Every structure is written in C-alpha cells, then in structure tokens.
Image 1 (tube, one colour):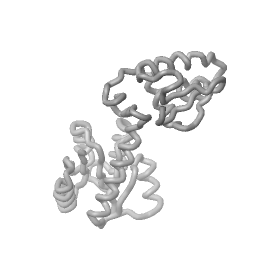
Image 2 (cartoon, rainbow, N blue to C red; image 1 turned 60 degrees about the vertical axis):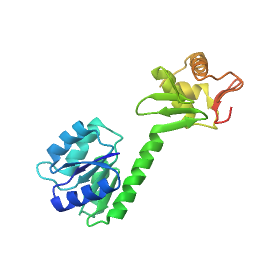
Image 3 (cartoon, rainbow, N blue to C red; image 1 turned 180 degrees about the horizontal axis):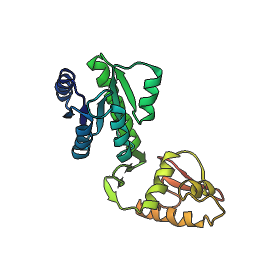
Length: 222
C-alpha cells in the first residue's frame, strides 16, 4: 500500500517516513500543498496524510482539489487544531479522519489500518464464489475473469449489496436503472438471465433466485 505524506515539518515527515516504511508501506513525501497535489497525481497513493497548515496552499484547499479527482481515497488530517468548527471544516472539505498533534505513531498506524480495511471492504464484494472489485470493475467466478457490461455489473453489485433481501422489480428499475416512472420491468429479466449465463448459474440452482411475481433474491448458498 502506498501512502502520500503532505507535511512541511521535516521532523514529522522523516519520523513518519521511517516508521511507515518499517511497517511495509511505500511512502512519498511532499512538503507543500501544490507539490502535494502533483505527487498525488503522479504516485497514485492509496491513502493521504495531510497537514492542516501548509505553505503555499492550505491543507483544506488541497483536500478539496484532491476530492474533485477522487472521492474514495482516505484522507487523514494531521493537525494542531482541536476545535469543533475546524474539525467540521475538515470533514466538509472531504477528509475521512483527523489526528491531533502531537500524536503517537501507534495510534496513527491503527487509524491507517482501519481506513485501508474499510476501503478494501467497500471495494471488494462477494456472492458465493463470485468476487467483484468496484474500483477495477473486475468480476471473478472461481478465479475465472468474467466480462460484464456496465449495466450487468451495476445489477450484480446491487443484488450483492442486498444479499438475503427480496429485491422487487420496481426497486431494481428505480435503483439500478434510475427510472422513476412506469416502465416495463421485463428488461430486468433479460439482464438477470444474462448474468446467470455468464456466471454459470441456472434458474433454480444459483446465487440469484427468482421470487415469482415479485423480483429476485441473492444468497451466498446456491
């Protein structure tokens, strides 16, 4: 995992760099806001540690610029600020978390691990032997790559996120197709049949079962 540190105090970024590399992370450092954005674009990090006060560009503005590009990367503010107002400002700018200086490395490390774990869980979804990766739009069935259309992928993701719950045809057409008026929901049957064919399911013995007259339900067990 790659971490970008945007921090202007050498004592802090050297300390973090050494500790994080010992933990097995790849680290990139930027000492001001503008170069921080440039290094974010060039290094494609998995998480950002962002100082609140930076030369040239405020940390909040750096956060806002990065959020215009990427809505999912975890951003943790490193800050000496500790007021409710400033915390709210940071969260509204798009930060996921903040840690107050001075901080223990052990606490920061645990925060980092939590955010990596949350991001991984959000990106990887499973249904029986099916695994989907949201960020890469990759689908695997028993380690075999399966090619899905964008709509098929969205439908499969919706069914997985609602495992164990009956999804009505009207609900699917509204949530997956974004259609809020009367529409022929028979199109869903076509896409479900395509998913079943590609994912080696049959109608009565698969991870997505038909609830007659209502809709569909997904379960890990076939």
